[in-house]
Length: 73
Image (cartoon, rainbow, N blue to C red; front, side):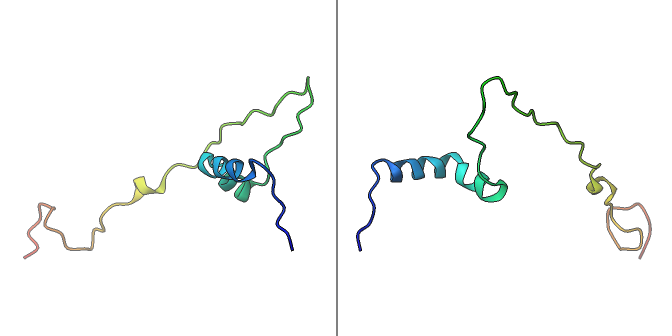
């Protein structure tokens, strides 16, 4: 059984690995490579993420803390 040898294949793999191409293609599928001249590329539309719920987080009013100005002792 012989191993097929393609010159530069390992180098291209390492370059793709370091550029993040392999990770991106793993999660999002292969990059489009066939672009027809005159065909406009799709521009990414900025997303409108929901407001962060971390802003709503606060210490509980029922939990003891030394940071409040109350006499709890």
